[in-house]
Image 1 (cartoon, rainbow, N blue to C red):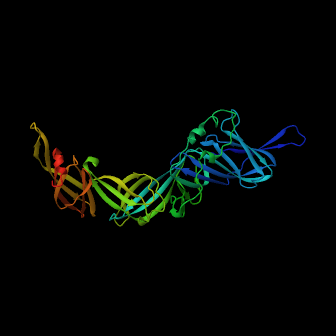
Image 2: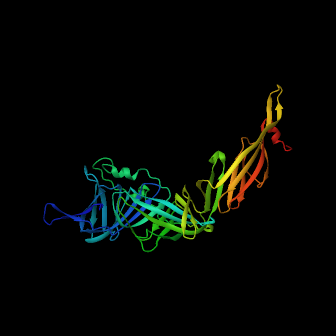
Image 3: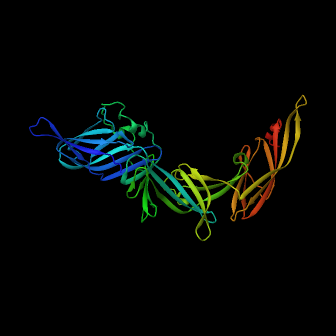
Length: 453
């Protein structure tokens, strides 16, 4: 098992001696460790609590980050007791020695002293993914959220409190590049103590907004009872704190459940727009991240949603589709494309085409005319539930008139050259409508603009 090697060098003056005696002591294991993992940058803030055994006077602490992705320029140590008697004087990096730093500590007390060591590391990451299970009528959906934490930092973290940050953070240097430098500041012999807060890389501590608790559950063979994720609103981010502690060895990934919400109201909409989607019908699933939809306490991190449908009384599931989405703020609607389907069919057909109302210029050339197209659109629902189908028709010009008839006579104007027909179809049924499109060209566009046309 890999560990960050931290050695305590106790230096004290021997009585009536002309030299200093150095004792090499291995530092005890971490008492606690906390990981704050950002998902928008390859960066994790690590906070370790350890008990140092100090002697009265000068002490030296050796810190090595060999085979890890720790940023040595971010190292910081703070005493958690007797702070007025302990001075962490400096952190130096010995010349021509790689992956090694030396803290010089002046102590006015002797014995064990708790300290907090903080640093930034790379190689820890997390991602979100979701599972949606539609009821048989597809009016509501059980929505389950998960996160996967992956550790490729070179360091094992045992019994770590794990926190996840949602939101963008801006950094000037990549942590992994800083960790791989031969010398922390680019050349040997230069020792500089860096305050993390001056770098602007430490998370904001002023909490804003409410704290809500949702159940979180590890794999059944690991955990006996549900855990909690505590979600807190920061000024620019959202902080997800996982209940308890987790052991995340280097090279491992761990999955945990972030929320589980039953009966989220959803709308299924089937869209046809040949110029955009081709000849297929696409299925869309929409809901809103608000209280009315049993959500809305916090933003939903972006990820992949896989959707299934309950099938039969045995609890079987049938796969419906999947969609990747970005971060969903509170009170925002989301519409997810689940891809093309075959059980809703839309077939538009051009039934007739002609031209008329020619206009000639002074030379006898055609300078204006009308084009008349007659379309028939057939729609079939082969599913066993009611469906809503949205059909958009795009025209080659913004100068047009339309007359339509059939089962579905109404349409909505979307923009200057697009209209939308919305059809509600019963299970295993079909519908049809026709429309006659007249478009105006050349100087006939001026006639279209006239109020009396």
